[in-house]
Length: 224
Image 1 (cartoon, one colour):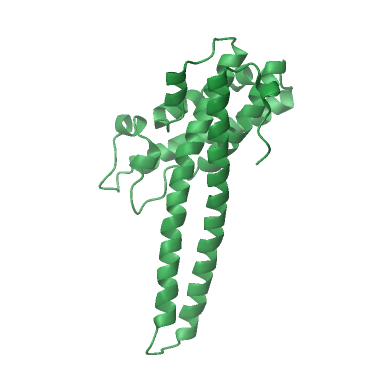
Image 2 (image 1 turned 90 degrees about the vertical axis):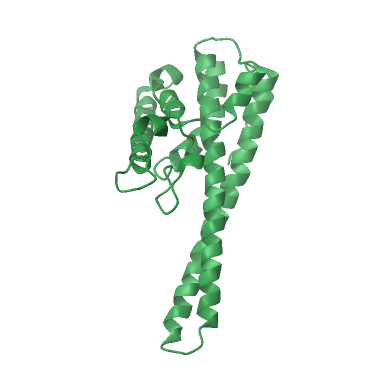
């Protein structure tokens, strides 16, 4: 991740606002690093396990293959746990960043400390969708037409990902499915259904990018 903008670049923010953005950025950066490491570990464990399975060839003793199967399982569990935690903080970081950016570009007063603390918590699916529906042209008004077009394309992909999340949580084939109003009020890290695709699968990369890029957009907007 790039270095977080300096105080002089974010002097439009209140001290609590700057602290909130900074600590969320640090949390997301460390979790993203651990997530990528966990992916590598899981892939290596799976590859080792598959090789051990191929070498069995009818052998009576399979301790090696069983050990690596266990390793693969634990690597998966750890990786999924880190991913869930990363989603929780990345979605909160994106919600915080969009909200602060919107207030900067519309010249609204800074948020109070309690509002900032709430934004540092994972948003519900409906809250995240509402923030993603803030017009890109309003948030990035100082950008040129090509930059706005690219940003709008990224935003549409995220809104498509929101619908995919709804689809996973409300799937008629799943016994634990939610109805749409319940899914709208749910935090995805809490409502993910065991054995199903993570509801943030189509969202995580884009939301992670948004959470890490928004402080720079705030710095840019403050100069406009």
